[in-house]
Image 1 (cartoon, rainbow, N blue to C red):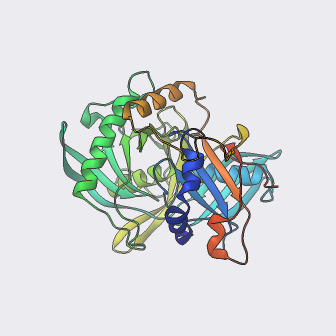
Image 2: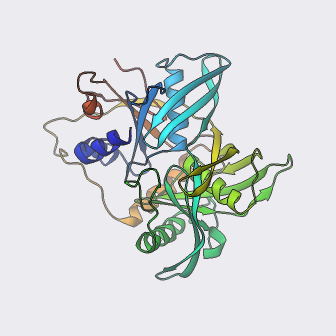
Image 3: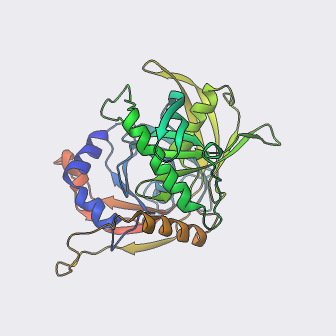
Length: 364
């Protein structure tokens, strides 16, 4: 599946641009493309396309994709529990859905192994000074920063979002220049691409651990979900510090108070790194359907993205106050018709432009 990601990124990025950039898209969207799996153990393959990159794995998008596959009957739903295997570019992901009356009440996925590259790595950030960060893999390469250490607060109150984005992008850029992690199992996956602000870990009343985070995604948005890969990376950091144990419940909240309920299933190794196997549980809702069109007479044959950081910050802030606190970030799933005769062209197969926020309908 990773080869399909590379092929799509290098040969068909116009599809992502068409659907994700203006006038049809916006920075706060993600898109999931459903493809034939390569791994014979998998039921379905999928790629996640974001406004600025093709991540090898995305947790909230996994929850959204599984919900759509089941609630639209593209994959048979079995009550009370349905188990499906999704193939992401980062590897095979087992999904367990709690189902009732045709709905997914919750979706848990066993993520790829997560591990830490660096704890307390010091980086010089222009205009800020020396910042201590952790660098970890949870399906993407993350820079993790204690928000309080740079005088920030993780809150959706008006006025805070732009500063989180501004500072987060500065720190991420500084780390990108100073440190390049390379995944031991796939050297093509290298460099940090995303930043997570964290707050202090607290004790829950049931013996669990509770924390809040927000993830800064280029080109200037805040993830509305708790972020599955970011949660996995943080669990790896917490485990490495001895603050989270195998089997202990970890409740990870987003900036808008949506929550993932997580745990470390076991220890493992990735190359020379000690790693964990994380499980993340959340929920997604189908919120609508829409179709995207490309009129050959339109002046927007070439899509565009205004590279004004202030605009992206403003969009993120406005959207944050419009979104329902019970809803995960907006995801779009695009379903394609598979090419059995030319498997290498599956990523470019005739794309049915039937899309849905947080999901999709059956392809016709």
